[in-house]
Length: 198
Image 1 (cartoon, rainbow, N blue to C red):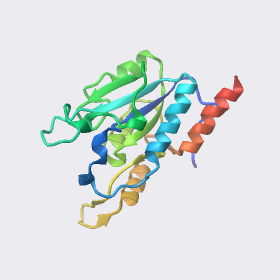
Image 2 (cartoon, helix red, strand yellow):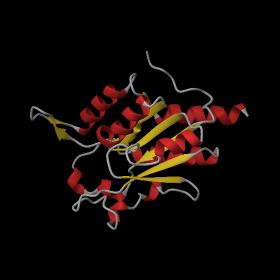
Image 3 (tube, rainbow, N blue to C red):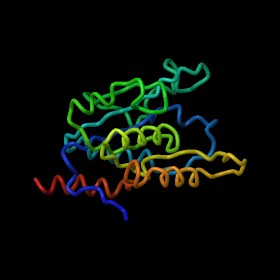
Image 4 (cartoon, rainbow, N blue to C red):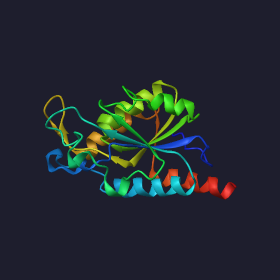
């Protein structure tokens, strides 16, 4: 049974935006899904900022010499529609999970932020790794399915899987065990319900 996002949204809900940097637009990634994902993230950012809620941006600083995410490359910069605003937290990571080798967990605990609303890329990579850890660490985690995206790839047996198929399987692996998968509309409605309740 689907667990709805709480309405109104609790005060300790933090929006987390993972790796939405210019590198993700490089054609070498191939075919992607959820073309409206950045627009949906921007809508969530607007709602969070209007409500004065916390936003954490995760930036991938790759150590791979050929990576477009490597610091010093244009691709390391955040995408224009997902730029951090003044005062918003930016956490740099070097692995898939935003919790490994970073101060993310400590900062969340110190700020008493127990509910995570996760967006960003790549669904089956950094997003999935971060959400799995968030769930295991005991955070009440919500993954926004249409504010994330991924790319097509071959499965272990060599069959081509579209970006939508990869995305859907990743969501299925996570929902109900590590997180609750929700839509942008559900989250925006929960934020709006918070404003109305005051």
